[in-house]
Image (cartoon, rainbow, N blue to C red):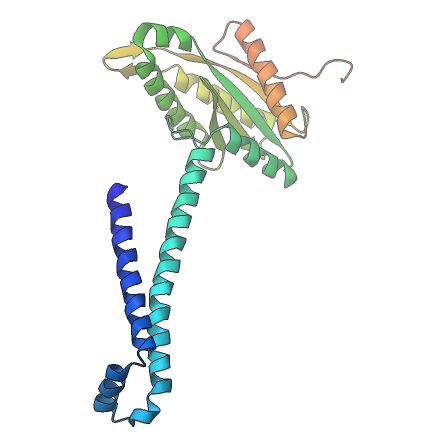
Length: 250
């Protein structure tokens, strides 16, 4: 970064020198430039003023165009970096909760017919951190994120929700297909993970909220998936629970 800044400063200095030189030529009525033009193009000395104005204008425009394009490239790069920081989790490489909320809200606004939100919690993750250290725990989360991506495919959305929780949105799916996805995820997470010669066995508890049965807004679906996930924990973990509306419908 320091090298790029130094390079940019060097170019800026050159441009300033060029502009000052062009201004000096203009102020001094460009007597030398007039004679050069007269010698090369055989133009009368008294007819070179307009021609010089055109040349000077072009020469001034080019450096300014360079500056504008350079700044535009830097701005676009900064915007991409901001998006990366704002919407993606640096540890797992997945999108984060902010991106998920935005993506889910946009999808629901498109009037999708059906869908499901899955909230996953990694069972016993605290013990992994306590036993092997946070570095191993971080690598475990990264591995789980990769496995989830393989399970649901690129057409669906998986994000790191918080801590050891992941959240998935499956648009245009029915209940039976959602269960197939969930069973695939549980089987995949149950496979041992080897990190730094340590074999770690994990499981996951999953809460499911269906759209539109369990909510038509993003916040409601996430909340109901969270309620179902904690019920899966209470049932012994390594399982899933589909959210159930209260009998009175409230």
